[in-house]
Image (cartoon, rainbow, N blue to C red; front, side, top):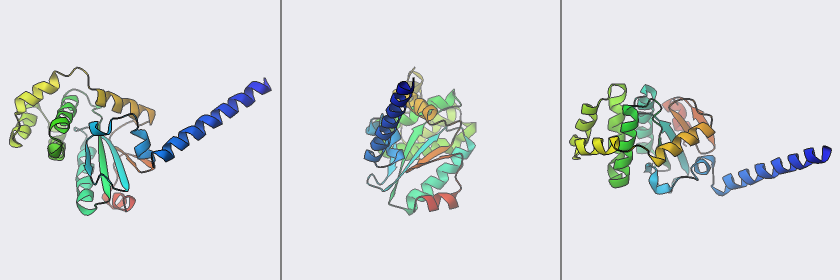
Amino acid sequence: MIKKIIIFIITTLLMTISTLASAQDDQNLASFILRNHEASALPTVGNSNAEITVVEFFDYRCGYCAKQAKDFEKILNESENVKIVYLEWPIFGDISDTAAKIALIIWDNYPDMYFDIHNGLMKLGPRMKKDSIITLLNENNFDGEKIFNQALDQTENAVINENFKLAQSLGLRGTPASVINDSIYPGYIKYEVLSNLVK
């Protein structure tokens, strides 16, 4: 019995060491938790070589996410040493899910336009409807109806599915939630706090 306990303890320690080593290889927690994603599949804004990595889980109909989006935009304008990886996590379902798929369609095909569409969807927020999303896309020189229907036709989205799994593994319960380098911050982060965290 004692021998089994010792073996169990040793095995657990080895697994912990292995996980920590992997995290160190990936430089920080933010990079480590994204290891199962294809980097090109994740919307990323900012300096790709930045020392500070922010990973945000969000839903376009989340009021505090919209508020956080304004702060992140300000941070990106102020610092060249920050990059933000946006993880679409449409926990409110329905049109949130469609909006997330639309944003990823834009990222896959027109990555330079992702940030504009992302911020536009954030401004629509809880009041977003099909017509307002199509109008937003049309105003940015897209075929809004076509892209909206393309998103509706997606029964599954591998990136979004992986984001849900990742959020669950981190114990996240709601949006927004951010990982900044090696720390997890559930909920809205005030700009004053955020600006200090990314210095």
